[in-house]
Structure formats: C-alpha cells, structure tokens
Length: 297
Image 1: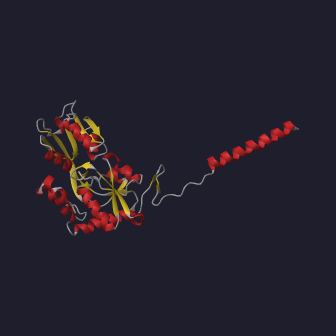
Image 2: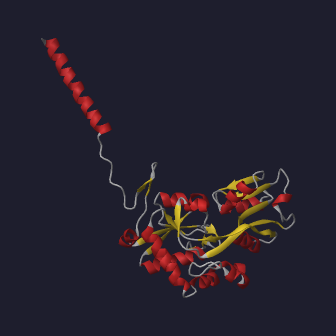
Image 3: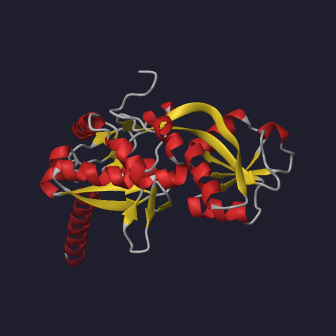
C-alpha cells in the first residue's frame, strides 16, 4: 500500500510539473504591438507616429557627427551642418525638442527599422533599393558621386586603375553600390566611418576615395594636396529625409514642411550659413533644391 501510495503521489507530481511547463512554453500571450508596428514576416519595423512624437515632446533625428559640413560636432560639443540646420528648423516647426543621434552610413536604415530614430537626415541619397526599405520625403539637395585622390597621383578615370589599385569607399553608401555593380573588378577598401575613410586616404591605403561629390569636393578644399579628378560619376541623384516604411503621418508632415520652407528659400539660407565657406556661391543653385522640386520638375 505504501508503495502504491508513493507511486500515485509521484505520478500526480509529474503531471503537475508537465502542466506548468506546457503553460510556460506553449500558451503565453504575445505582447501587444507597438504603435506603427508592421509585420514583415521576419521582424517588426517599429516607429513613432507624428502624434506619438508630439505627445512625447522630443523627436529623434539621425545625423552624421563626423561629416563636415553636413553633420558634425563642433568644439563645444554641439551638432552643426547643413542637415542639422534643417533638423533644428523642422523640430521647431513641429513644436518639439530635437535629440540628435549620431549615425554612420551603414546603419541609417537599421536605425529607422529598429525605432532608434524617427527621421534620418544624414546626407541620405535616394535610390530605388533604399526606397524598398524606408520611405523618402521630398528632396532638398542634388548630389552625384565623385572621386578624390592625391594631387601627386590624380585619378581622372577609374578605367585607368591597375589590378592592384584599391578604391576607398564607406560601407552602405551609394558609392559602394555603384562601384560594385559597374566596376566589379575594382578592389574596394571598405570602411565604416567617414573619419576612417579619410584617414585611409591620407595614409595611402588606397589610390583614391569615391563618395558623394559634395563630400569629396569639401575634403579636397579643406585638405591641401588632394584633387577631385572625377567630379561626377554616374547619374545625378538627390538627398532627402527618410522615415520608417509606412510612417505616413510623419512623412506627410516633413513633406509639408519642405514645401512651406521652399516658399521662403530656406535651403538657400541653410547653404549660405553652412556650406558657402566650403563650396562658394557658384555651387549654390546647382546643389540646393527648394520646395522639393528638382530642375526636371
């Protein structure tokens, strides 16, 4: 009888443990989705709507921190540059404070898709591939690719490069994509940051550096001994703000802001405050887009 009683108690105990384990592993209720979540079959893209941002009182904007004159941190620890100038105005007109989040080229899309930032304003070139992953607002700047090299050994054509010559690029940029697709035999020296790419060129780790022409022109002007041997590579493109895919309320607010600012020539004022010393007056009308309208429009 004792043996039978013990076996009965043991069976009941095992049944209870099994039931608890089943409950813990198989019947949990998923947490409710965050505002703006979208199920893409693998992971959710989380974003804050315009109402969410206004309720919080702060907007998170991803900008570069080492890419003068577009986005950089000055000697006082403050963000400055063409993109930052626009970001401050956008936040002001939305009635919220701005929190700048330093980003690199390679993680701009990731920062949007994970909700780390609400907007990317980091010299972001519009491409069809990127438009599949984020939503672009109206453009505010023209851009093409360019190539900078030492004056002592200028690169004026990529077709003239030798088999062992390496071209410096920043991972996640249009330069990397363009060269991979159009010059597959070129050897690319890839870096994650603008600062590392700059150091690589200065240290002779590559024969040239391919990037947005606005950036390589700025580099050559600020660093004696370098020249932009190829001022335009490939097609002309545009720079625009980006938000998470599907964040229509924020996208519409940005578009309305860009259109309104165009009426007061805001982006020309932005250029004159942040880019004039670098590029001079001759490039102003070529680079600036007002009201989201390109020359073709």
